[in-house]
Length: 296
Ligand SMILES: Nc1ncnc2c1ncn2[C@@H]1O[C@H](COP(=O)(O)OP(=O)(O)OP(=O)(O)O)[C@@H](O)[C@H]1O
Ligand SMILES: O=P(O)(O)OC[C@H]1O[C@H](OP(=O)(O)OP(=O)(O)O)[C@H](O)[C@@H]1O
Ligand SMILES: [Mg+2]
Image 1: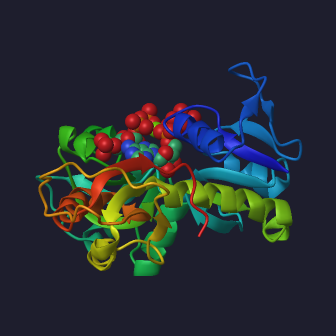
Image 2: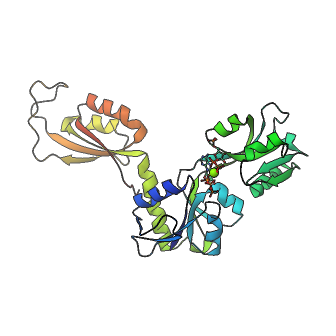
């Protein structure tokens, strides 16, 4: 199976990083090489421009591809959106000069819109029943309203800085995009494709989770469990030889309290609060680690 991957641009590095973390280490590649092998003899990589990846997958040069939803939609190819990889988040928006007369999409009727995404833009205006002229440009779209090439634009925004610098205001959202794993419909159900999708999915699932390990007096277990919003409840293990508790330890731990080890998966955002509560109910030696992959 062959995976098409962005060869440059902002999506290149995070995609290579994802492949590595999913266990698909790329082998023997010089920087500009077109193809590369991975540690899996059944999986190879094709490097292509983000915009060309949908075409490469549709034509069979690759079986699956990693690129933005915006690129897949713009290509017009029928691809299966297998998995949201959650990076490259951006919005395609309709924007117009801040001090102009365009306040809503209907105001664009009879005017000109410049974009690098003519298919998506035409479909958007058709859907809304608005008749306007769409002109295709290949870059620096934000400049076109200032040189009388266009009255409005449809372009990518994420932080909003580029629009702001060019004194353009968002009129409407056309498409919310992120990077996806796409497959050609005829291979979308193949075992190898599923296997790769599961591997990527496990990396994404692990990203916002942390693994917590701690000791706790057995009698505090019910309280500890209540604090841990873990997946399917925590794992509890006997501690072979409980350490001698420090005399006069804070928290009122019974001198003979039998200790257990508790392991749990916790949302990264909850860790800060959870640790505090765990200490409060008597947990000690709390360790927090990252998770490489998580297959649910
Ligand atoms: N500012 C942004 N924030 C987040 N994602 C973005 C942003 N700009 C583009 N993207 C996403 O990354 C994809 C590729 O954009 P990128 O800018 O990497 O291509 P490019 O480098 O301009 O391509 P090339 O250099 O090959 O012409 C876009 O299709 C979109 O999905
Ligand atoms: O809302 P912002 O954070 O400012 O991002 C938006 C900008 O990012 C992209 O350009 P990019 O940086 O990829 O440059 P490019 O035109 O060379 O592709 C996009 O084409 C916008 O111009
Ligand atoms: Mg770009």
